[in-house]
Amino acid sequence: MNNILSETELAELICTRISHDVIGNVGAVANAVELLEEGDMDFLDDIRSILKISSSVLSARLKFFRLAFGLTNANLDSCEGVRAATEAYLQTVGSKNHPLALDFSLENSGFCRQAMIAVMIAADTMVKGGTIEVRDAGIKLAVVCSSPAPLSAEKISNIKAIISGERPENAAQYAPVFYLASLLAQKEQVLKIIDEQAFGLVIEQR
Image (cartoon, rainbow, N blue to C red):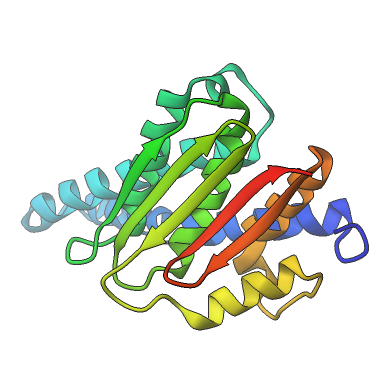
């Protein structure tokens, strides 16, 4: 990855992606506050709903991003805590009509960060909901997604291109892929793609 992105470029991509993922709800909170300042009580129920939903989404996403991209901390040693944070994140990505479910069974806490990022990558390919399964078997981690609708062929193609050493347009959208590849290189782990009957990511030691 070093021949594609410098550490600064990688940080820029991650910051851009995170900002993109929270700005909509930040804007919603700002609009709700503006309505409150105008003092029109006719919109009070709407304002409460906006603030409740947006604050919940922001809290879940920021907690997830803190664990996935932040400095290593004790919370990453808890597989159950990581599962809860990842499940809460997926609830903010899916919709009421097309929810994203998590089937999470992880015992090796050494895979926690990799699992979170791989789930984020998998979720990006899912257009109309589905389930993401996380399993580890000793030195191997598998994150596989299944959906009633076709996954995004464009995103899967770009994910493969990045793993092969290319850099697609809209690179910030694929910041998790770049970051995961960089992280795995440091840990002497490799990333493989499953793209036959289902799409998934497999991480294992070299």
